[in-house]
Amino acid sequence: MWADAAIAAVKSLVMLLLALNLTVLLLWVERKGSALIQDRIGANRANIFGGILPFNLGIVNTLIADPIKMFTKEDVIPAGADKLLHFFGPFLAVFPVLVTFAAVPFGDVLVIGGREINLQVAELNVGILYVLAMPGLSVYGVVLGGWATNSRWSLLGAIRGSAQMISYEIAMGLGLIGAILVFGTLDLQAIARAQGATIWGVIPAWGIIYQPLGFLIFLVAGIAETKRVPFDLPEGESELTSGYFTEYSGSKQATYMMSDFAEIVVVSALATTLFFGAWQVPYLARDGFHFPGGFALALPQVVVVVMQVASFVLKVLILCCFQILVRWSLPRYRYDQLMDLGWKTLLPLALANVLITAIVIVLAG
Amino acid sequence: MLDQYLGVIITFGFAAVIVGIMCGASMILGVHHPGPVKQQVFECGNPPTGPARGRFSVRFYLVAILFIVFDVEVVFLYPWAIVFRRLGVPGLVEMVVFIGVLAAGLAYVWKKGALAWD
Image 1 (cartoon, one colour):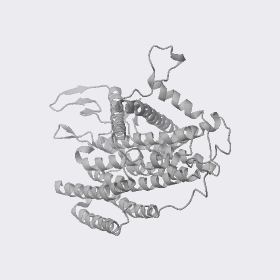
Image 2 (cartoon, each protein chain N blue to C red; image 1 turned 90 degrees about the vertical axis):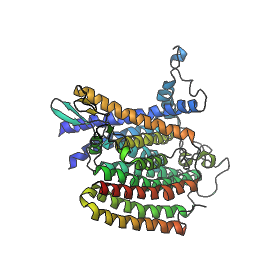
Image 3 (tube, each protein chain N blue to C red; image 1 turned 180 degrees about the vertical axis):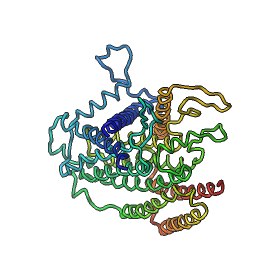
Image 4 (tube, rainbow over the protein chains, first blue to last red; image 1 turned 30 degrees about the vertical axis):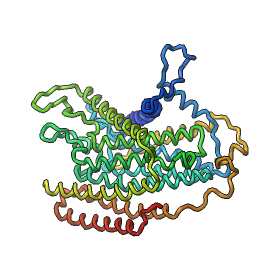
């Protein structure tokens, strides 16, 4: 019992640190990446020891200097605000997103001293329900935080945000039904293992091969859930100042900002798990590579596990960067267009996807 | 059964501590000089008038109601999707009828203009 708890605690810490590091790294990718896309230099002023070093540690800027700056700012709470909810707004925006990672598998089993450790914090047999339910709770962070501040802009942003998030949650939930039909389980680790198979012995049987439309619906709905451009109407700085976090400052504002990036990581991690083979490396089994054509390469178990975890992180990182690319490439939607896309395009498409998948499965036997 | 959720509970604990520190850091580390002007909510430079938590468009309520209707129906699809291979053709026919009703409902609210934002 205590050994299990200790292992679960270590796995939980590893996963949370992985998620947080990716999140903070994304802040830097966002600042430098946007500079690259817009043909400017971007963050270049941070240095330690007064510029003694001959080179510029650009990455230090966001990884250390920015959080220190944000955390030591004054925490301004406007008059008439609900102090408790003012705290729980940003708390509830990030907390549900972080705990989602508990169900995401980041590797196959690791055998240490005869004990098999499943590289997944919580081996839930209802993993998909959990990973859909938890990020859905972050809508409370938006709506409570906006309501608590007693500001018109915040309230409008919060209401817009909640309407947008719940609208796209339906499309997201329906978009995943196709994947569940294909895999026949809600257990994320079982889904990850199922994607280790190959089609005709060559093509890795990743979810995207079976569910291209499902992936598209999931990705669009996921980007909408992160409330970033092209769907950043809740923030909409041209009309709502800064939306639901107009009246937040210091570390609370930083937490809200982080919630966006944490959601990007969550969406990428879920898309990887369901559609891009999770931690699978093509042709890599537990005992090494088995290439098509009979060529095999035996590898020690630790190397295999490291490669699986690296493969998972790499896939998540690529999808994260893709979302940042989308954010800096596309213009913003209008609010009616946003709701139309969710209800009149994605929802019927997702229903059609469910029907088509079901019919194909029945026809294929 | 419950030991499945051991990892979830532990993650809840860790995440609560991490996020709590992040949210509360400014309260402890930051300076604290409140003032009447600083504590005013932002209203583009004008003094705010009246309560902020006023009325807003009824369409948002409509979206909330539609969300509950559709989300509950989506939840019904999950158990069906898991056992679909065992149900075979009868399961498909039943669900085509169910999704047909769902699509009819969507077409109805669409036609009634509940999804229109003008």
